[in-house]
Length: 454
Ligand SMILES: Cc1cc2nc3c(=O)[nH]c(=O)nc-3n(C[C@H](O)[C@H](O)[C@H](O)COP(=O)(O)OP(=O)(O)OC[C@H]3O[C@@H](n4cnc5c(N)ncnc54)[C@H](O)[C@@H]3O)c2cc1C
Image 1 (tube, helix red, strand yellow):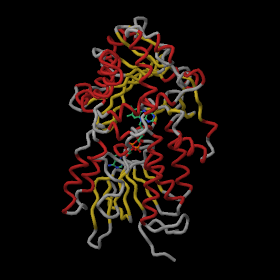
Image 2: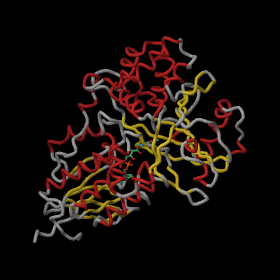
Image 3: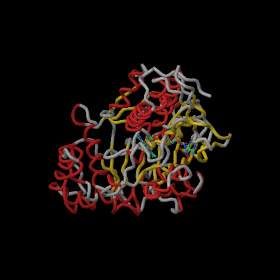
């Protein structure tokens, strides 16, 4: 019989923590997930509409190339809940909405002269031909996009998107980040080259709950409403996770929250030689996101994903979810997200739902002249402080390893997804990977060790 051990404790029940819990539990490792929120799913969690249907707090979809998530869904026996549909992408520029879903739409994009339209279309193909992302590592997005598409395409199409998404960080964003976006969108296409995206019937939150149920069935314990406040070592050297309900001993700890927060949790157990590493975790910046969700009695537009290339409009994207998953799935409600990435000193970060709506209304009416506030059945604002890591040029130099210098402590976060960008598909990949690393470090063969959770 192996000796009694403490469980692996996972901080956070987003897709990374849940997948890691599932994989550890399947290997017979006692695993406890502690989640601050009252529900699982993290950034991809949901809320309940008046009719009882669940919908994401922040808009979510998958690309058809998102293989890790599809494999996991298949393994859970839920593939029949995945829907793949053509989507409709647009771009708002000079008070006009342009459709930009297919190569033909690009050729019709009149704000650019015809030669630049061809260059714009060529960029997506060229991005897919870049085989080694390292060749782009030291270059910023702005430099690379200008070089590829010329000044005109940059000024009209890319610069407003970069500035809209990254605000004060726009000039520092690495070319690798943008290359990935172009490549991903180009790879999620069906017949006729129209974009196709995938969704989970019942929403991403429902999938998170399914993973949690499977992890629980495999032996993991998932506690919601449990906030981790610190990590310390007891006098006998045992790792202790301090929570709002007291300390919990752990054999290993996997942290899935943003590196600057992880640094604060780990500061007390890090060694004297770990200061530079802690500071490097702290140096990884994130933008926040504030998302105004409108539930309407009718459609706002025909477009699913509208990029806003108008700096005077305060949101970078308008995502009309029910032009992807139909309103009939939500008791007839049409759901529209207005998304804004921002630094937390931006005035919109402090606005509540009513203030955000009041601020947005005149802009919405300018964009959609037929729109009337009477269409709004309900509105909400969701905010995420740690929404998007700032992926600068040369980012590979600061990406932290999953195995930290603190014995028994592991890190798997959105900020480590590189050269890809954050997303549930990669959270699932990395959750499984770090679980494998922890199990190897515990010297476990799948299913061999059967301890009990103290
Ligand atoms: C606006 C927006 C749109 C997005 N759209 C898409 C999309 O279309 N498709 C896609 O695949 N991905 C999308 N993403 C990204 C996706 O949501 C994330 O990549 C993924 O959910 C990250 O999962 P995670 O587990 O790594 O982190 P998180 O989801 O951030 O999970 C971390 C968890 O830790 C918990 N936590 C924090 N502090 C503590 C503490 N002290 N104690 C205990 N628990 C704590 C949090 O509550 C959270 O549940 C989007 C993200 C945003 C913000």
